[in-house]
Image (cartoon, rainbow, N blue to C red; front, side, top):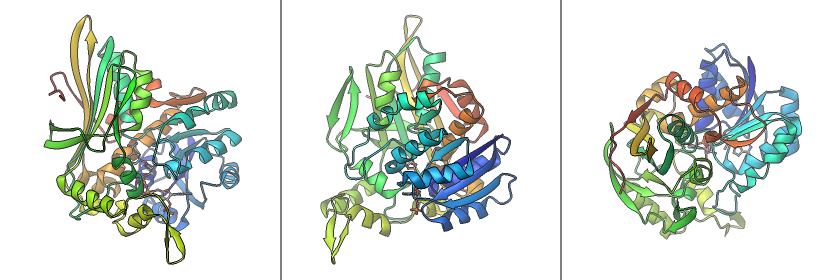
Length: 399
Ligand code: NDP
């Protein structure tokens, strides 16, 4: 049926490639294009047992003319951006120029300021609408499935949702003293930033890791979790009517936080370039180079993730509580696609979002977040493609 261009060849891209190949009826042909072509070729080799026709290409996704040339040559119906958030705008520009649909898993972030928000990508709304092409923003797990969960809860369980708590727990153990589960630079920028949440239409800022709660997660048990700023708060507060408060919590072990504090204290997490032996280097980028590659964690990681949303709202005049979540097992993911659960829980929804576009279910010209589409076909696809969801009507609430 379709032809997709996948940009990036890292941990998440690897899962997207495997899942597209498993879904050969929809993804008949894919091209894997990234900065380092050898990584694309290795990925191609890892899916050679499937029917999908796979090609590879070298591309610098910061360079619009290069992207345009590749898109014109390959003629995909969709570009799946699983490179880094820094490349979102150049890839969107190339999609506009060639009139091809676009999908990503993380919102744009300028490389020199650790601040991510949707304003840069939402500014493309009119241009995409006029060009008759669709951009789906943030189709990973969080953002992504958390937005689809919210749209589904509103459609089927509530008249109005007033409170959402998004809980992201990873009880995986990779055996290293310190490593990040996805791109270390993006991950450390996210967790060392100030926290924030939205209450009554206003952002409330907190110090990094200032708000801590303990939660007893289904299938994982009790974990410490910390309030973080997260990108879907911004779009969900706008798109889910009636929201009074929305927060995001992620679990971290004391060991992870102690390492992070040490690295911060010695300025290794800084994104300010410094002079080193006559060369400018960014400490965080250097740190990324010495930390374990997230793609290498797959064979070592044991345990489960649990990511979901707790909703409080009203149905037929009565207060109602509802918890939607997915539990994913690191070792099962590795057995299936050769990646750990963090890449898996991001890559599967990216494939599903692309399938929604290719099959016309989510086709509407403009730039949209996932919660702005019909959640039902996506929710069915989650069950079918490896991320089945669970629901509870009596969840423990977060204080
Ligand atoms: P990786 O670092 O493993 O992979 C990134 C890939 O992008 C690498 O192959 C890299 O190439 C490539 N790349 C970087 N810059 C360029 C460029 N200028 N031109 C072409 N290719 C480039 O990251 P992950 O796979 O872990 O993450 C991918 C994306 O997924 C990120 O945007 C991340 O924020 C997002 N994500 C979203 C989540 C969600 O739930 N929504 C959760 C986790 C991640 P090279 O190999 O040469 O370095």
